[in-house]
Length: 337
Ligand code: EPU
Image 1 (cartoon, rainbow, N blue to C red):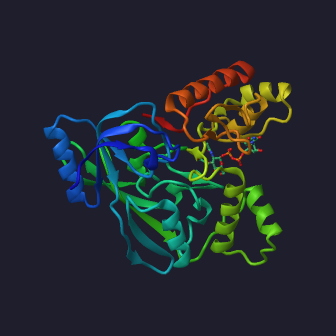
Image 2: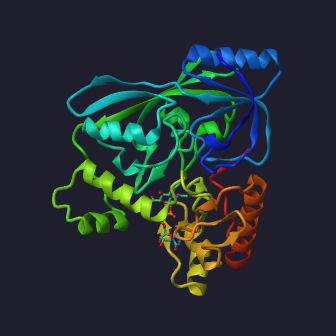
């Protein structure tokens, strides 16, 4: 194990924020991981677990041990006539895993193409896009209990998935490290094309026979047209969650803002945070090195040398202005560190 000191985290977070870690180690196995945790314990250091760094905003230097998880490997565990059960190490790049599944003709995650981050981080916030969430294909995961250093298995129920939520962001926050995830994928695809953007793109591309590859290509095209490539402009995807308001509140808003998009759910109406932010005039906003993406207002961007603190302040200003204009409280999706 090679523990490094005073390492810049700029290459390890998709926002491209330049903060340092006092100690930094890459782990490639559960044994390495345990060793790193023991080192931290002996040195009385806090530990921060880093996956793809695609859902964090660094607001300070980290006076602790950053553990970069690179536990890799994809394995077909078993199959029946309808499904395959595939286990992936937490460190695999999510999009590479999706591409691998498509090559094998395993269906179920094609709508989740091009989401940044790692497989291990995917259940953490139940990643989702275009009508599919990880919980739809999730079988189980293995996580290291940070206290006992034992591996424990979580099924879907014990993960308590919700919209961009799981038990690991809530009740069990900071207590487990996800080491592998097992997915239940289909041999015969069930296509999810309910999103208008997907239908439009498939039609534009002249797709006559649906396939998981065609859907993946469409999703990639849509994402590339709206979402900035983190390799070019630092960002973390959607910065805020789409808020849900009561049916009464939605009617009230609709009276004042007739064009407001709303998606009815069981307990209320989900609003499009991107629309609210755009209406409040923030789309394309820029102040020095930071700003709001000009094609998707839900995405905050770092043009190069931006600071996490400035992005945090900008997000607060956006929240305040949305509250003032619409009486709706936005919640960040990104984790502030
Ligand atoms: N909209 C605007 N202006 C904007 C952005 C969006 O008016 O600047 C409107 C759109 O016109 C549309 C609605 O908002 O009516 C929804 O927009 P879009 O389909 O782009 O999706 P989103 O709600 O902004 C969510 C996810 C994305 C995911 C897409 C597609 C959240 C927080 N975000 O975005 O996930 O890719 O749907 O399913 O749920 C992420 O989590 O990082 C992420 C990118």
